[in-house]
Length: 105
Image (cartoon, rainbow, N blue to C red; front, side, top):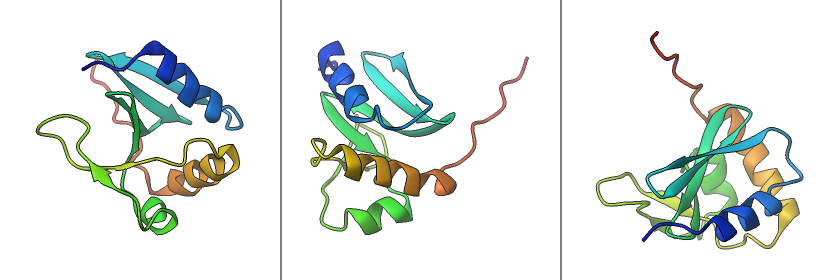
């Protein structure tokens, strides 16, 4: 099942306190970036983030879910209504996220 544009827009609105949030559509789902680094995405109308240490510490009771078959587990963000928490969560993750890979020309 692909994610709806409406759910993506809701997630983006909840992340609107952060600067430099972007996204890219990919096979019916959406990859979400913060300052050029992938933080997670919207998969089957679920907001999932990378399980970096800071995220696991802030969401120690969170559910781990597969974004799609064959992928690594990610953290399900079920507290998406709390914009202040989301801002703190994403900012705390930033330094642990891998830098984007350079594309070959």
